[in-house]
Image (cartoon, rainbow, N blue to C red; front, side, top):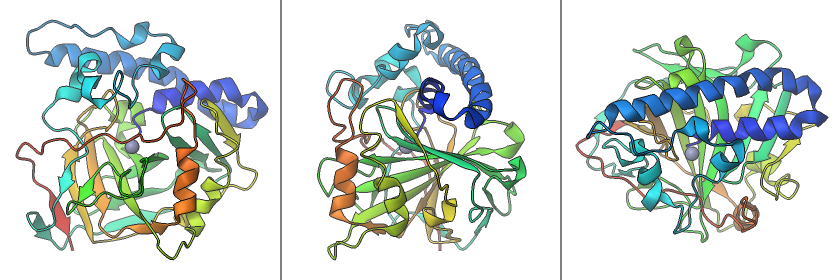
Length: 328
Ligand SMILES: [Zn+2]
């Protein structure tokens, strides 16, 4: 998941001079995130098994350094993340292999979705050098989409959504479902309402809820109509650290399917550094479809070092005894 909320904020501040009305809501988030970095770092230190902290403190990185801090190639890729980000070596990491034949099955809880069909007042799509990130703002704060699933009744409020893709049609998704990888996986990131912000929620068990949606290549080459709203703008944000402000914001329901059952859920982590283990994952079982041409557009995006982002998925992590629950 994204995980990279701080990068996005940095980018927006840089590129947002053209959208001053949006700036007022982005700016406070930027200051908050410095705070979160510090706290995540503290939690690293506290959980360090030998009582030492060999990590370089996050707050000492310049904004530019931060965005270079991890990648997907040999030098900076998932295999070495744990050296820099202690939590990435934890025991409840994501993504994982999901196997529907060995899950515990229930018929509840059903997910209830609210406000996903409301049109936002402002919307941006960014290339932060790692992924494509969509953010939106609604006219009234209470209009922001949220969902809940009884019996917990915790409300999870939309924060952002982003994507993971691969260099060929059979890789890209982070989670695997019955040994299958998909061409694209969308992560719709939410935070628990009572925790106030995604930054604060990232410090608590299940503080963050990520809805994962797979996309499989359609052999009929049908475009995914909802996704095309983003795909058509990818050329505009080809360079890292670029943002486009949408003239016509669209409701999330065009992109996010409002399923109530047929999903898998488990507790895991952010799939990018700092890999905090505070994510309640909900993965939709049924993949959506996408055309080959649409996926290609993602593969043309550039990272900060000027290379194309051919893939941005983390390999599956061991379950280590965690239970995956299947809701039918
Ligand atoms: Zn993600």
